[in-house]
Image (tube, rainbow, N blue to C red; front, top):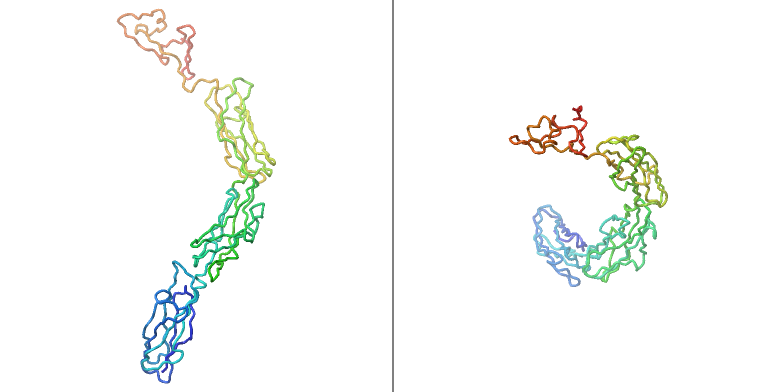
Length: 426
């Protein structure tokens, strides 16, 4: 029987991790067990180093009766942590010391380790999509460099317009050397800066592309561009979105003091963002504790925002009702834009009607009287008896007691008796 390699040479990329090698046994009589030894050796030129580029091997291949081939693996070491582009390197595998057989041809095979693909300086975008706001003024796209980064390299990062247009939406990065990004030795990432044009006109999301090309490196083996050589840029325009809203959510107005007179409350309706288009919103009032027609004049009107207009004022008239009451309120509402141009926010405002000539919320009817117990049943005698008689205690008579006088005891003194406590004169 004859032992020999299945191939004269094997080629493997450094990143593959291993290479599989076949050793064949042929002959007329394969009925006996056999053994052959395989060892690795350095080559004379561009030799790979055992322990650095591959794991050295010296092992026996055992053949059982009838077996005509054996396959074994040689581990290839990848300098993944700190890639260094070395170019093609080689080492040899040699057959020796056959048992129950002889060596044939090829008895030696060469393994070529190539890192010119895996360790070649390569640039590509880190993400397939970048999103930014027009109001931010720019978008930063990260360009990542892998492989052997020990050399300085440059790459062009240029724009290709889509729905977003040059000069109106962004500043062009032409496919020339003015759009170069430079990587210094050891740098793995750089930013490709896209400048945006911020205007006052609201636009829906617009897109363009950033493209990488013409990668150059000081490495003698050159440089390449990775699979993610293009990225999509999405420009949003949230800040310019047209918004219509009330200037405030709470308003206060005093009720008129006289019949026939009115007070008014002015409610500003604001438009923010893009003012280039026509918007029409309806403003209307709704009763709360205040009643339309009695406490205020109801309002239901269309507010039109023409080109460039940012504010309208809606005026609501408040009426005199002659009734003493607590604070009342009604609400004012905004309907959506009829033209579906602007978004409506803060669509409800509360208007409070304050009493100006009414009594305070808590009313004290009258001061109590301090009298002698002798005069308790006829408190009016107090005025004629300023000095209480000796021997009688002093008592305090309040308005809630039946003996409290219903007429003034002193000039200019008025007595207020709540309606719920009013009684017939005594």
